[in-house]
Each structure stands twice: as C-alpha cells, then as structure tokens.
Image (tube, rainbow, N blue to C red; front, side):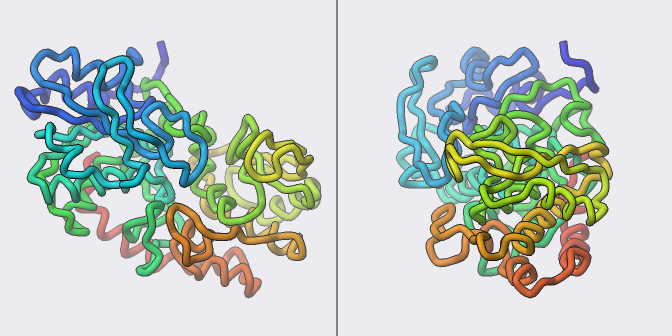
Length: 393
C-alpha cells in the first residue's frame, strides 16, 4: 500500500457520501484510464456497480478514453466500450463539445479527469466545453476533484493574453496555475461566466502544500507522455519545446525531462543552463535517440532535467531558460514549429502554447531571463486576486 496522507478522491466521496447528487439519474461519465480509486477500480465500474444510477454513456478527452493515442490533433473515434457495453464519445474528434445527441440519454455529466497543474493541457477545457453544452441543454455537471500533482501553493509564468485562446488555453490563466480541476471549473463557471449548474465534489485530506507523491493516491499516467509525477513536475516548462523543432523528449523513456536536438552540444547547453543559477534543479549533459516524433532515429545532444528541491524549483522559468539557451546558442539551426497546433492554423505554434507572442519576441530581442520573469508579475498579481474566491482547500 502506498504511504502518504490519506486523501479521499472526489469520485470516492461521490459514491460513498454524496451519492444523493446522482441517485436515480441517467449519468454520463467523462473519464480516461487515470479515473481510478485507491483500489485502482475505474470510475465507470464504480458508478455502474453502484445500483442507484443508470450509467448511459462514456466520454473521452484527448488521447482517448484509454490514453493510447499519442499525437496532438490525431482525432480519436467514437466506439462501444468492450467492458461496459456503453457508447464511448470522443471529445477530441469531429467535435470537442458534446452534442445534443450525445447527451440525450444523460441527466448528469460526471467529470473525473486527472489534471497536471498546467494551463497548457486540454483536459480542463474539455470539461469547460462540457459545461457549456450542459448549460445550453439543461444538464447538470459534477466535477469529482483530484489533487493538483504540483501542489496548490505556487503559480508561475505569463498569463494568457486575449487573442491567443486555443484548446490549450481558453482562459487568462498563468502557465502553472496552482489550482485543482474542481477549483478551475468553479472559476470557469463563475468568474468567466459559463454559468452551468455545477457541483464540485471536493477532496478530503488534501491540502495545498501536498504534491501528488505525498498523498496515498496512485499515479496513473493521465496522458501517454506524462508517465510519472516527475514528468508532470517539469511539464509546465518543457512543454514550450513543443512549439520548436527541439525535442521535448517524446520517443524517450523520460519525456519532458530529456530535451535536445541533433545539433545540440550537450556539455555546452548544460553549462549555459547551469550558469542561470536556477533554483532546485541541475542539468546533466546527455545523448539520446528518440524512437518517434521529432528527430526519430537521430542521435541528439541535450540535457536531462534533475529536480533536486521541487518546492524551490520553478518549472516554467526553467523551461523558458531551455528555449532561450537553444535559441541563443543554435540560432542558425533552431526553428520554431510550423502551424497547425491544436487546431490553430494562423498562429505560430509557440505563441499558441505560450498564450502570447511576447515570449517569442523576447527571445528574438535577446531579453534576459530576469527581464522575462519580471514581465509576468503584473498578470500574476491579477490572477492571484481573482483565484482567491474559488479555492476550496
């Protein structure tokens, strides 16, 4: 049994002590492979065996309901679930919002997805889209909360700017937001005006200072390239490399921790990064050969990010330092990724990821890392004030 603070998950609490919220209802479930309880029983099985509701449909986010689809913009198909016999509707398909037909047999949509604590991740926006459909069609939404794997104290990075909204950023959140999925959905619903009938089933036993490994919940990879809590820890920074032709480590056994490209001198890059004196982290020169995606089958030089003190570690600043270092050192070979990215065809993919074009322009101007970090402060203060009304723990 995993050791850590006892944390009752939202789906467990719904089935054990908040069952009146769904009793007698026709229930749809938004879930994936990480939607499990402490016994690793899937949320669909928990609801189907409860005896007091009728589970009528399953809905899957990006990467599919089983989490087996790798790429961005590789759409997943609707299907029939072999275990439950229920229809499975992909919300990463020809539609990213449930249709009236998909919800015709649903009174209540239960959402149980594990977030990774970063704005640049589609699951929260899949729930936001479900909330919009629910408001329009008169359905209720229940969000079963789960821990933010990075804790709920720190937040960091630039706040998404108007005009840069996408499926990896619908609202003006900072890159690392420090909120749980339930808190985010309350903010979406009230602060940004979705206005559906929403209930958040909270966690018991979780507090903001806890990282995922400090709970007794089991980690199940929420998407194919977030296999461990360590990969989630670095993701809010390393994800920026998806907007470049530098490998973010997909196709290796340490995605988002191992970074580089064929033209990178590992030792040179490590020295440059160590020179920033970034807190809580060390950079180890390494070589690797991705088995798929960028530079598949090519020998790459790069670094592995080793987080030594995660409460001091600033993942967003660290990822920005990696992009800046690659841009400054390898400008002749360095390239921004070409569109499209996450269904956006008319913007630089790096800008879509960053939620602004200011960060890319700062690299191109040669701004210092300190100046880039300082430019985030005003937006973070505004966000901190706004989010205070929606915190649950």
